[in-house]
Image (cartoon, rainbow, N blue to C red; front, side, top):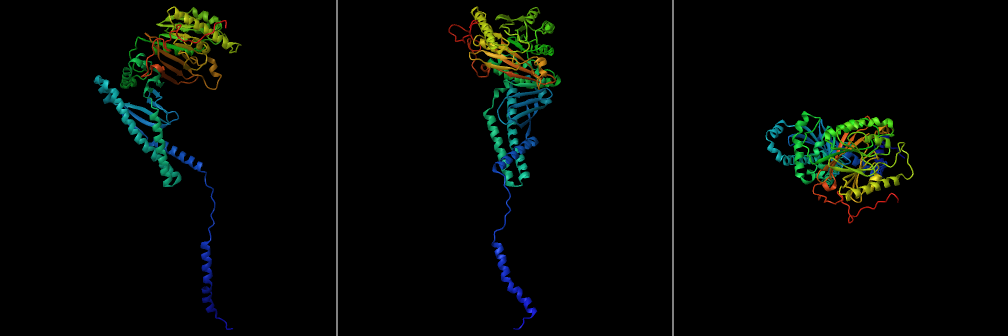
Length: 535
């Protein structure tokens, strides 16, 4: 066989191998590719991540561009939306403090910062006081425009913030736009919730902090809150115009003329031998022009004769002092107080009229300075309350109905339900308010001594608490009350909360005589049965 030359083979071999090479290449293309399996996150994890991106981006957007500078009357303000668990509105009047309003329930809070006064607008009000009559409408319009502008700007801010952060995190335009859309939906839902729960009358129950806590005159005429609500609104408008004076004298608010028909009662309790309490009480008497001080007991800590000198400053507090015995006060304490001028000790249902209000009280049947719990303690409190209720009925029969009943422990005070409009108590070291079954309002005061030396026993110091009660002189009805809370041992915070009885809210029907707010027990009036001491 003839041999093929090497040169020819070098040409034929590539040609002969070409079909097989093409076949292998074709098969390789048809074979499925090997895919590396990468674990994918759970859908809920991805959703949680998206929500986190949306919330953080929306918050950053609000911080950067989500505020509006708007004129409100004579003031220049900055309005801002802030994330919040409780909602509400906060008005910052630097350097005086702040007012907090429970205006709505939503995950956003409206912050209004008073930046400065416009000199021209302020001077125009001073030169033309007739403009005050239209100031309320002007302020309302300014707030409306500012809120609308803030809503638009906030929408842009949250969408831009969430979209930008989504683009940074996901690097996909579709995911970023989804984050922006979700942020807009959340803001719209928050706005709808705020609108649905909006309480325009929350301005009647503000909470003051900072130097604004020295604003007792804001209550004005307590009766006008109910009968002349339009006048009260004008007083609020006057407050806006008087901010000029506040910046000149930041320690006080403009003083409105007090109404002589308003009786102001300072309720204190559980001082527990804290000497700082007397200075606080004296300051409140002066600032609020208090007519009567009511102490619902536990003024002392052990009730020994050695402690009696602690009580001497009561004579110089500047107002009559009505007192009932607590479980830390002894009969030695009670007898010593009877000898002090301007002190009225009430016990065994004794009643006395002071500054136009008639008070009756009973001392605590227990004496437990060591905080021991004796057998039958609650029964003794209920029996004491029953004796007080009997005395109240006797007073009503005699034509001298009692306006305020006082006991140390709430268990005793509850027994007078239906016999008196208002009952005051202490003992619990925190304040509470409730309307009992038969219409009596029970006010339990916190510790005006911050629990005394007992404040250092716990992890956090107890606050110092007291209340100012506003009564109408003609009807002797409770019109409003301010809850005052000062930071306890080592703290310097101060807060005042305004409260109105439900029947005094705007639009509510006034309580007629003989209603739960002013019960007039008679044979035909259903009252709670009270046990006799022998039961």
